[in-house]
Image 1 (cartoon, rainbow, N blue to C red):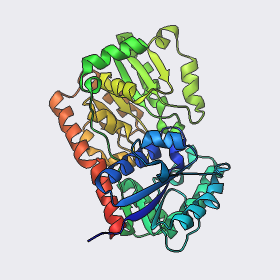
Image 2 (cartoon, one colour; image 1 turned 120 degrees about the vertical axis):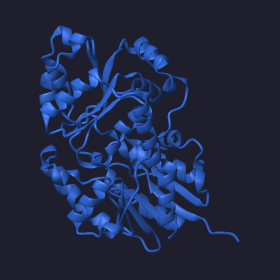
Image 3 (tube, rainbow, N blue to C red; image 1 turned 180 degrees about the horizontal axis):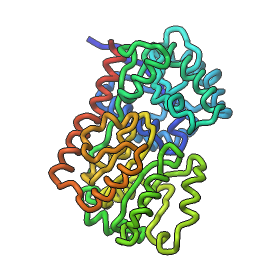
Image 4 (tube, rainbow, N blue to C red; image 1 turned 90 degrees about the vertical axis):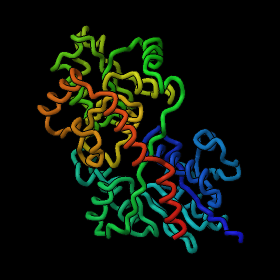
Amino acid sequence: MNVKPIKLFVDAHTIDKEYQGTYTFLQGLYSALMENHPNVDIYFGTSDPERLQLAFPNLLPQNILAYKNAKPGLLRYVTDIPRYIKQYQFDFAHFQYIAPLSKPGCRYIVTLHDIIFNDYKQYFSLGYRKSRQYLFARSIKKAGIKTTVSAYSQERIAEYYKLKYRDIHVLPNGVKPTSGSITNNKEIARQLIKALYGIENYILYVSRVEARKNHKLLLKTYLQLKLYKQQIALVFIGKKSAQVPALQNLIDNLTAEQKQYFHFIEQVDQSELDAFYKACRLFVYPSIAEGFGIPPLEAAMHEVPVLCSSATAMQSFDFFEPYWFNPANEAEFSVMLRYMINNPPNAAFLAEVAQQVQQQYNWQQTAGTFYNLLTS
């Protein structure tokens, strides 16, 4: 018996932009879905077909639908996307955060990753909050299938928009298993990072820079503990998405000695990022507000010590206990950072955390959940 393929459109405009959580989500989810469920015929809408092809190397060119009206961005919702839905007669269309007006015969899926701008207003402008409040609320309420990426976001979306919890389905981000000689060998990774960047014996934080990401807490505590006196370096990797004056003030006032051990790198390729993870002495994730929080899980998969915030979505990462902290408590963080430097967890603990991460956060499992939503 032949089963009719499911025709699915994916608005993939977020892949056109800088690497961030929605890029990881789309690439991970749909790579696993295409591998495990070939009866789903998937088309991607994009304004950068070449970048999309890099994200999905095995995707057929005819399944890439180029946006002709990509600027201003919202124009694609009233021109390109409705036209493609009508032309290809899609069964489903999947959107991140914002969906256009509904089209007959096509069921909309909306993934609302977070609404942290409601609970942490101090980190977002009034214009940002007001515009997204309206668009996000309209999109998630009207979606045929409502999804998010964490139990925390599920709870906040349901409460804020007066929706039923059971109507919001959680599609967790997955973390890819480590592979290759660099990512599996700490010494090779250390040698590579030292050769390429002249950095060794370092604490690592991977995240784009925004005030809520809390880089300031880590740098401030690093300086207070005078870890540079112990020849321990501090490395930030991530683009500056927003100006953070308090952080910049700390950086501008570093002494010559402190500057020797502080490194700010905006972007590295994936193989170098894997090496940075594997070679670090300690990975720290002090973020105040997240809809999910991928980097500490990536670090854990490399079996390195992780000191992780327990706020917002990270409250689900209880496998990091006792190396888990409230980012609002600076004194607690200082004590824990010093303790982990001097008393890192043993290899057995790190291996157990990596195993739990792989069991709870893998793309095959998430793709299976998503497929069930398409076929139920």
